[in-house]
Amino acid sequence: MNTKNTFNNAIEISKTICKLKLSKGDTVVDCTMGNGNDTAFLCSLVGDKGKVYAFDIQEAAIINTRKKLQELNFLERTEIILDDHQFVDKYIQGYVKLVIFNLGYLPRGDHGITTTKETTIVAVQKCLEILEPNGIILLVTYTGHENGKLEKEALDRYTSKLSQKDYNVVNICLTNQINNPAELICVERVCPK
Ligand SMILES: C[S@@+](CC[C@H](N)C(=O)[O-])C[C@H]1O[C@@H](n2cnc3c(N)ncnc32)[C@H](O)[C@@H]1O
Image 1 (cartoon, rainbow, N blue to C red):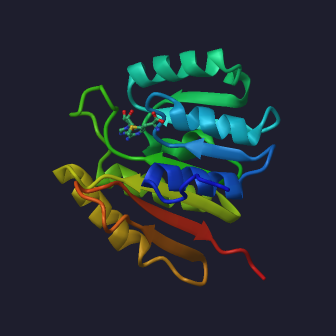
Image 2 (image 1 turned 180 degrees about the vertical axis):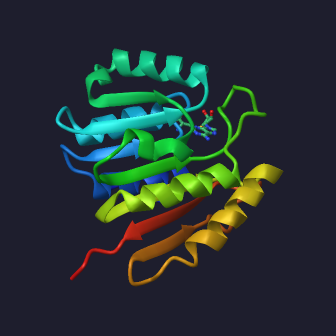
Image 3 (image 1 turned 90 degrees about the horizontal axis):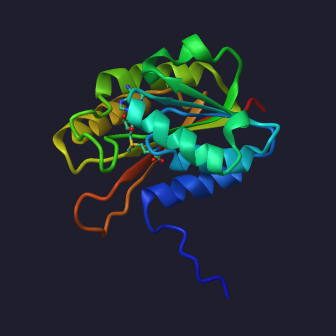
């Protein structure tokens, strides 16, 4: 019997979608590298022929992620970028299969350094332009703090207006959980028939 739940929280659901979407050799982006957990997970899915671009604005995130990837022998398949994800187009020219944003602040880090609605929307717009047909953007949002709530509202306004001819937009929220659980927005580029 399979005893593993599918819907425990938004991060686990986003990882299940990554597994569903990705194959060895794919190119993907982690727009909020943090401590490198998602970056390492993506590295394991794309394999040694794949590529993971990872962004963060904090030196501490870069140091923690580099250490983690080195231990796992994943450094060669990663490009670690110390820059704001709103400049993603400066670093990536080709198409990518998946982009993940785990928004908010670095756990156990400075809670004052957090993603903002303005720069996140710019980054999402730019990532939509480099998304392969059938590719996906995953945004894990946190509404438990004021800034995160504003960011989620701005993302909902923006993503809900995307053309249904070009994108499938899905929101996942755990409606019976207390304390503002994280939510997940998925934007899939529709594959032409
Ligand atoms: C919730 S953490 C990410 C957790 C991470 N994915 C992990 O697996 O550990 C959010 C991260 O976004 C970063 N961040 C905030 N604003 C950013 C921006 N404009 N561009 C890139 N990273 C940003 C923060 O520095 C923080 O490390």
